[in-house]
Length: 340
Ligand code: DAH
Image (cartoon, rainbow, N blue to C red):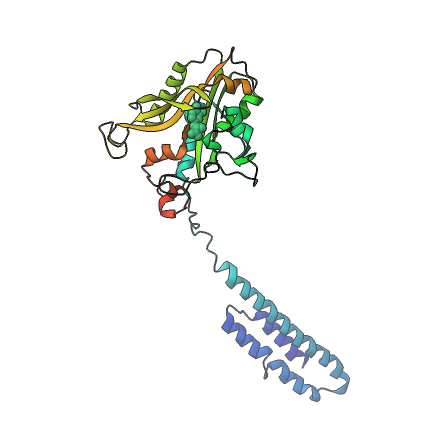
């Protein structure tokens, strides 16, 4: 009997189980209802009484051994099927899709780079602004229509004190309050106007403000800076023209057109057959604005300009509908090369 037990122990160790069918065969043989160990148990009654206890313990040990072996093999098989055989480490990895940058972000970066090359730093200010920085310090008279509810989103009901900034000119004021001339900075950012949304107007859009203050800054410096910008942005053949205009914070003021890049100034429906496209507003900083921020207007002069990022993007990418910029339509967005 003891020999038979030893034989089965040896047989169990020699079993090589490679798959679930072989494991099932192992189970039937050693643990099933008619297994070999059970058979030995039934023969226990023939063992002499003095050896019964010892042989019984050996049989119980054998039974436990068979169960343990079964469990170990089963776990091994499960692990190997879920990991080793499924993961092929030589396979190339899944490709990660790289997104593209938003066209407004591309244009914004390009504007920043162009002005960076001539020494302009970037300044930022809050989108929720007070009346002083958005209007009063910029020489807007109290009754100016731009303060009207139609143009401005006021934050608190019944007061005109806090509003979503209507232009990035507010950052000019903050920079002048905090820094001493010479000042050479641009301020890109989002602005808000209470407008009905259409292809040509939106309740929010983006601007880049420019400000240069030093001794003896002249209108010629302004013109040359804007010509440099136009040629860097639209190509070296680009020309600019300045038309007299009015802004409360600049005197004199001008609106700037760039020669139509689409038809080479020959006339097309984008430039409405004029050969020119309006791109920004500018002027010499009004002495009242300098004085409001404690800059001596007798010692210093400066120029400022403000442009719409959507407008520049529209001319660069010929996107005619402003709504496309904020609808997140993937078919629109993926057309812009990432540059990353
Ligand atoms: N703030 C003006 C606007 O939102 C744009 C502008 C015009 C900015 C002339 C300037 C400037 O700095 O000099 O329409």
